[in-house]
Length: 496
Image 1 (spheres, helix red, strand yellow):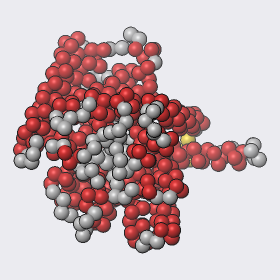
Image 2 (image 1 turned 135 degrees about the horizontal axis):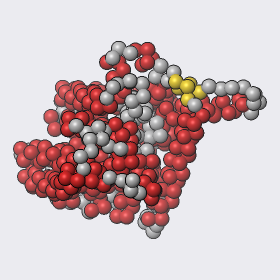
Image 3 (image 1 turned 120 degrees about the horizontal axis):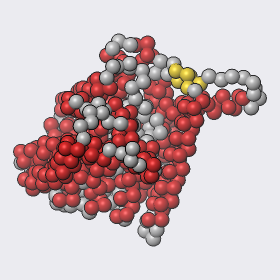
């Protein structure tokens, strides 16, 4: 294990984070609202601490190694440790700036940002300076593209080959592109991502939002993160006459950013044949439409709500949860039990592979469903040979086995995490529904859960050890388990 190389790359990663803090600090210095100067000072101090640690990590790496490639084992360590370090140092502004968060709360809030989960321990969000809330949205902007995928694009300009980093970051896969250099893919993804942010931002500004609000919501919408600068989330704008237009715009971008970003590259290369083979997108959009109709029809029939209102509320909630954004306009915790069961299923599903969304991912569930169908038929036709085809590609038995193992492991971890949360919160009166909702919201990077952590509540009442545990669970879910779990395997750390 080349620890000098790991130190160098992690130092560069923290440098990128420090630069982002400085940018938010400059905004806070310019901002004339209350608390702006203090927020700027604390952001600059956080950047200085982060940058100082980064410098201490970079210097040994530069003097002791001249490697221009990142081997696979080192890449795995960089990915897992990198997300943890970014979450730790990203919590400094919340720890240093009033109204202050505890160390556990600061780590939770930072991890929620970088993993684009959207859960929060801030009780009254409007009490915080706008510079700090911009940093909060910026962590989701960086986490959405995958701060390490963004880093791949930057590494290409300093002569470092970082193909292993790209493949170990869970959000993106490059199988169908055939590009000569992985940096080309990362750079194109970065350009597409920034383009979507800008289009979303200018659209929100045209609908009457301030530049600050439009920027924060564009950052967290395209990242499918959902951290709003308002306690009421998107419901803050419910009294506006064009609220339906804001809802529709956000629904469009939440759904769009739940699709595989590599499809956008394929479209730019005019490979439309590959686009039409994409089953993930069809399944995702079809399931969202079906669940929206079911919930809207049920609420309209049983509760007497107008068809248009019930459809609007259901559509926004369904897309927000399925995309793992977690914005809220209504309290779905007050809906009938069967509606909440459907929402829980959407949490497990998540978006498409290669998107900024969390969850198990639609593609894996497609393979699971097709495999289950073939095994059922095989009980009375044992000699029949089945081919599982997804997105025009045949899925071999080894891939199917890995997917089945992944889904099983994910569910087992969720069950175990629910038990741990129940243990840590023993004596607080927490309900089983709250424990399950807490784990689903964090492990699947959703944001809101159920009951005590529902869409109108937050995670502030949880105990400090629980917040630290859930912060780790968020990173575990963001990295799709293995990139973090592998850090606990002793063989990984052996020297060459």
